[in-house]
Image (cartoon, rainbow, N blue to C red; front, side, top):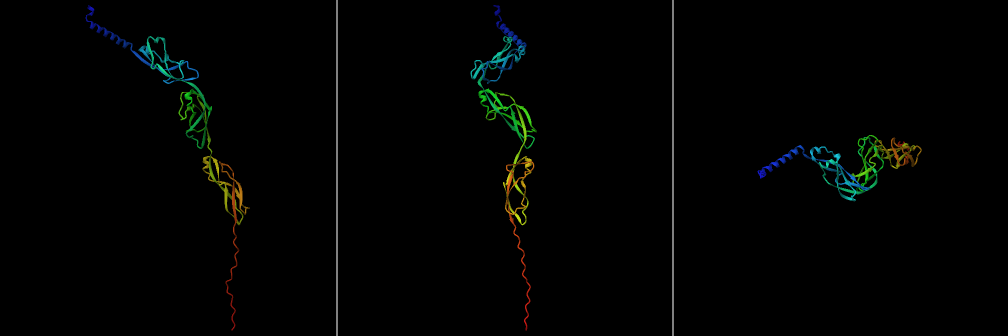
Length: 330
């Protein structure tokens, strides 16, 4: 039979023609792949449960087909979803469903890179926490105390029970470095655990608080000795030989700059003009300007008075003249 003649050559020519046709086709209409990241939608979420996608909240989808068709696709045309109607409390392995235009089905191949997702469902828990403010840094103004008041003063934390139970407080951090006066700002607090680390995957209500920072003049205190002020001394020949004061010191409150200039507190002037014996006097303290005396503002001053010994009047000196001797008669 003639058709069997040169069979090998004919088969080779046919294979060559097919390969050539495929090559031409691949050059004119090459097959390519394109990957998209699309959000995963959750359907039929059980009420009062929190759902966490352990493998991520987005799915990587690969579209494969002829170049001119693939290049016409957009990620918004793809929807990835998970049906939670059969999910149980705890860990679940659920399939990812893809929806895309019907005309793609016969012309393109659309597949998720991971056909399954690991999903955890937990009962929802809600708790109220006070807002704590952590102030750091030093303001430009010196000798001030800073206070910060958050409004509202508490935040409701809602989320998976395991996450909410980790929360030990809600904290606002504020750096006062360079602060020159009072300030009000809107800021987002941070839920933290017992070690101060942020707790993620929980919701806050409200999401922000208004922080009012106030700078208040800083009062400080200092203990200084009391010095009695003896103005009028006892009449002559009486004199003061000893005195004491009780208490011996008092505490002052004021600005650090003012207190640094004060080393003693005097009493009001004490007059001893009519005192001729030991005496005890209650006398008020004289507060220095710009400071306040803490505690009692009077002291007790004890004074010992003694009369000076008067010198005796001088005695007449004995005569040193020699009386004349009577002459002897011959």
